[in-house]
Length: 479
Image (cartoon, rainbow, N blue to C red; front, side, top):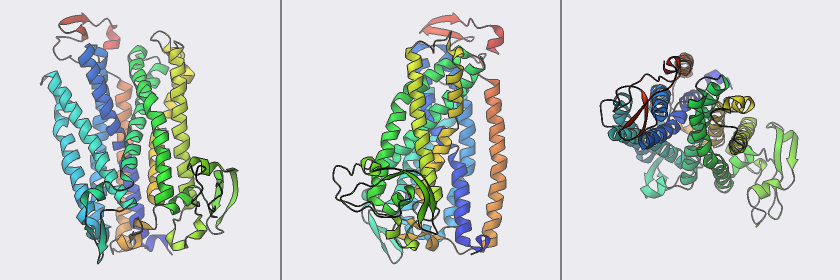
């Protein structure tokens, strides 16, 4: 089959391109919004101007991500009507309303209060501004809720049935609270927050490494570490729960994630493939490094081995995923990054307890700062890898065991889809480099200590309500 003459394949490639590129932006803005709530809340509580300047600095990166996220998210949703019209017609009774909720509940809430958050610092009462920041964060994270609800339903459809090719909703709440929903939303929420924490920590570490505003950015890094103490291990645990759900709900995906070709019968514990080279044509792994019985322990089947771990050979080729190496290694990349984050967080806490992260010596921790700088982009890679596993591993179904992807694509001329694919690729390349340019310029410029603080005539530290202490920074540090 010629790749460039198959409409379904081209439509899948186009949606993959737009989804992967779009995901780069909300994955930061949703977690960064929570961070803005935290630092602005600390400023209101302590009146320490450092936290006010942190809120102003990080909000610039939030606005950049929000803008690019909107620009790339709208075309992605339009594809449901252009490239996937049969799918939209079949499941619009439920899926369409969920996407509508994301726009009306989440995006509109975020957009409505974003102007106050950006321009309202010296125009509205600080409490009103803080409420606006909270509502922006709520809207950003409501998007995660509704998008993951829709995608989870595609993974484990519930609450109705297909009647003459149309999904009829019998129980709306059962459809929303489908088997994948709770764990999927938790996993993605933690992923966005964890990615944001390590981006914030990585940028802060870059300043500290280069001995620019080290004391100022040490505060941001320490906040990231404190939250990561909870988020990093919790994300590993929730990821484990997600793997267990895949075992019970989508055995073909689990077999692809583990490159498990042969079925391990009940009563035996399956080996875990640490690394392998899957060969789809030969239906085997050309080589592999395995840990005996480990998959049984990971899936907690050792306690009760009443169920087999089904291999790919037990499913007909047309009913199992393709691109096994992509699924297999995407899963391992995601796991490796998750454990790296946990390890970096643990080492950072140890150094903190040893007194190595004080304002007067944190600049000496070059190796630790380098680790945080290295970690900054890894969250993006982990999130994208997870979505590859989630969506490519679901194939050949667009709605698992209900609607095949091949039956869900619009009947369009392949040339038209290829042209739009090339157009999207060109536009996104330009957007990507533009975002990198403006983002790097924000980081190079650094914080502005000359910005007026609400309720004060000039920059300074208000240590308690009604008490003003002038800023003692050198003049060059305030610029």
